[in-house]
Image 1: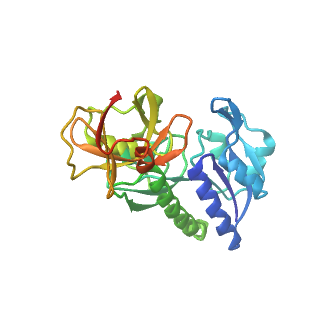
Image 2: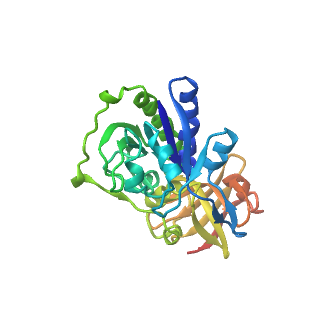
Image 3: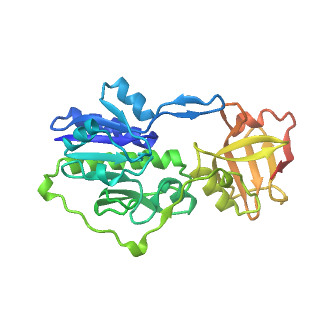
Length: 320
């Protein structure tokens, strides 16, 4: 069996890395990897290739890039036509109808949600942000409409209370590979797909910069979900004495001994037994476990608190 792979981000990379193990078992070859072109990123606007591109070069996979345009050169069309399946995971662009029709048995999407719930760009993040208790992975045959193709199989996965995007992404990648191994061992004539229920479709909209700044007047539960959903990328942020701080890995502070303060008040407690970095919210309080100052690395709450010289409780105002 000849398969191709198309992806662009870290979730894709986990899938591609796992596919190399499936290929090593025999019976499957992967003569083509597709990704998107390098993008200019960071303050220096340096051209940065995708993790898929870097991994493919190191592992001597034949790799091609496809941009957002609709034109595909004939030589690439021929390569895709020789595939039994094109496996797609977080590619980054919508593949056009021409590409979808080329593989002998279609393009197969690995989507980290329980379709038709959370179609779209950010299913893992939106699931955590919404407070879902369960998510999962759907493997479907791709159609022209976004994530609307018929589904081969769905496997559920519980979301733990303090799962971050990074945590849940890793769990769902593992589930995805288990499903792909089963899919690729199933004869073509035994593969069946079931249409999605359009009436139950929901959409995981793309994350935009304006939603990343924390509004401390919201509830602690809502803010914790947002912080965890967007860690480690693109990350929520707030301000402390005019300095922008990124926040990661938060949890509800159930048994707090602080006096109630205004939303956005940062409370620092350190003693021999415990260090605590807490913030008052519109209702409830939360505990921050990771923090990143501008142009610095991520540090845990204890390391951040060590910068405060006074013992006991310190009350600081956050710029909100």
